[in-house]
Length: 317
Figure 1 (tube, helix red, strand yellow):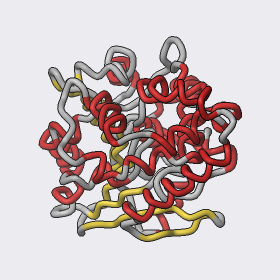
Figure 2 (tube, rainbow, N blue to C red):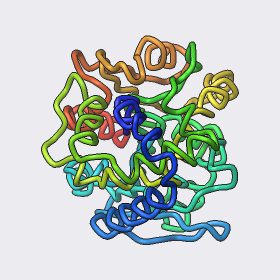
Figure 3 (cartoon, rainbow, N blue to C red):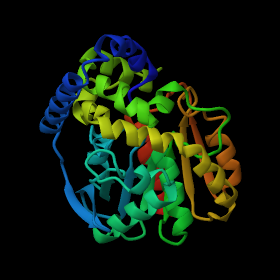
């Protein structure tokens, strides 16, 4: 959620504060405590293998599971779309391992298949049966992994701006630095300690572009939860490990015979549709692709009616 722009704007502080590690860590600890006090858990906790998963269950009806993207948490869906869906579905929102308020998995949860297994076990404990599974961005990869591990479990998938196919190149300095031990010890504490609200809002705006971010979005999701030191490291390691996961998963996509709705913004530069959504739709036996003209990476906020229509189509089947 927080971009390279923020890292660059704070990088100069490394030289100034390099000898003040205790000061930085102390302020970072206070800022983390403030973030958690201002944005506490909103759901319940279930325990899987001795590790807690934070979950929020809303409404009644057929089961629908929502899985958020990189650097986010389940609150991303609670600015309206989850409440709307809960009028007709039993909606289960899950914090992915190591993000939000869910405990991390070994190795910081780099293995997408193991993340899917973990969330599926948590959903089972909550009584979820044959759900529609919706995944946004990185969460789309987890939704695909869920179906690969349990082909007869989900009744269908909804993939929104989903990272799904092996992509060319790397992921840039932001993730490389924060995934490293050096970055976790130097840059991450500076960001936690000194990132301003304006810098966070700028990073949120970049994620939504070219669409506008909903007013109050950063405060609603608790954007400062995403820049806690351990959360940044885990998120960076998960994102850095995504490409190898997709390379391993992609050959198995033709085995997924369940219906899949793919919705993707045509102007999504975070997860470009020509790399992900379009080729994925050609690999799946039963996929329907909706390219949302002009939309960016967060269509579930800008075009919730299209997301709702796709869910309803799967439920009708």
